[in-house]
Image (cartoon, rainbow, N blue to C red):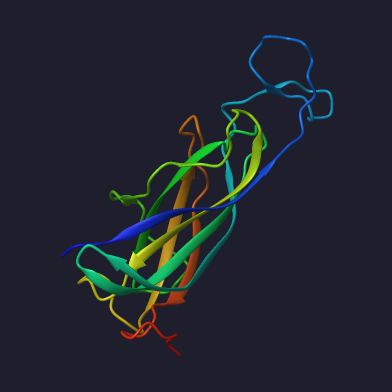
Length: 171
């Protein structure tokens, strides 16, 4: 049983920084007078969406995919680099067990400079019909995002239906 996936960087927004003339590491100076270092604050998943990811070509052929996307905020601007892990089950009840190892997504680069990205998005396309996901079937997904310092977010949970075997939307 093989699972094919593709990690995507979806959105990246940067906070503007002023040049202070200091050679010190960048810090968040937009925190209302408080100085916050660019590490230690957990990112927050603000939304998880599940949709038809279209048909993708993998080494083993063409497969319809389910796209699981998250929107992430990080007040310490530590999303210049991020990744996410994903879990799923077929019981849509608002709970997904994340105690076992999940499928690890790849690291994606959302910004060139550290401590400059406070909003980001991440998506995973998962092949349907590869032996793990059945076509036209409801699944519930959970994701945890990791910022550049590998600080974990909250668990984001969302549900959706995998596409039909031909890649069309399932009803």
